[in-house]
Image (cartoon, rainbow, N blue to C red):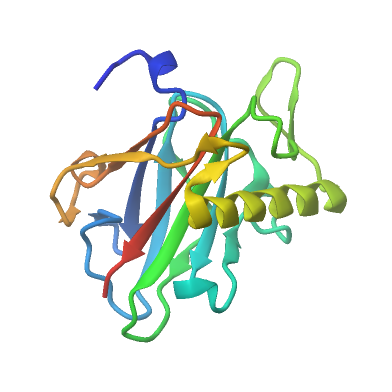
Amino acid sequence: MPSDAAALPAGVKVWFQLADGRFVSPTHHRWQPGEQFYIHLEAPVPLRVALFQNYPEDRPASRQVYPDRQYPESFRLMMPGQSTRLPTLFSMDKDLRDELMSIVVARVDCTEVPVVVMPDPGVVSGTITTDEGIMKSADAKFAEINHAALKDSTWGGQSTKFQISNADVDISRTADEVAVIMLSPGLLGQCQFTLKK
């Protein structure tokens, strides 16, 4: 795998962490009904992130679970080179059906998604806008991207499909053993995981 971040501008490292502190692979872990977890991400460039719960044959329609307009902080940019734990504690449905979760990421220089977090000069983390219209617009654009990616893995004629690289490890005390690397050469991408029960 190349080490030059510019060669993989949207290479995103993803791992999940159970409420008890153990790290699990999104692609290999066998989930329990109601099991709770956090999602961690790390990338070489600033990103905006959205998560969706998808359903077979789009019935019902996909449901965005992150970011959440009730918590403007969830729209904050993910900063490069830092491990970011999303502030939401997620929970599996309390049934035995597998679940579909997609992660949609957009680089900060992707003009398709409205910028909710406006960087302050000299401040790396940026400030949060609570403008409801901007947040709704960003949510709507992420939903469009997720829908198009599920349909034919493209957005605006460009592939949104990530290549996945991961170890065959289910659960560990270290994140690196279970992390999935999502690689994409574009400004945005989408990856759907099947969370198996």
